[in-house]
Length: 125
Image 1: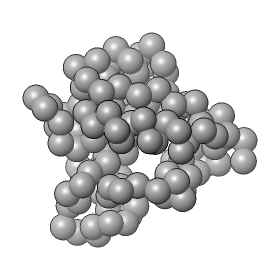
Image 2: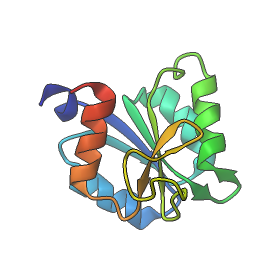
Image 3: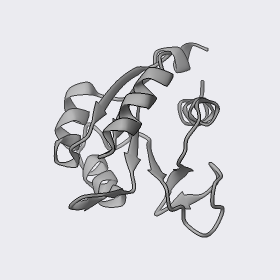
């Protein structure tokens, strides 16, 4: 699938093991990982991702606050964002259908089938 194969994905998560594993598992995508949330907006501006996956709970900033900061930038305002969390919201926990402040939520551990589904849905691939 063309959109999926060429998708540029920015993954922001303070867990280095998670970002390394996702980068290896998601070899069909162009992946950039950021482990310091303070660098996320700059990395997004530089990389110009098709989708951003953000950890919900990170030091000094929440995924929701970071999502808002990314989408506040005019060049990134239409970039789809997905919140990834080990503690999902109560409603719809564990499904792609659950949302947090309007952003879709994926529950860790995340497998490639779910990542692929998410990319296809959000990019119309």
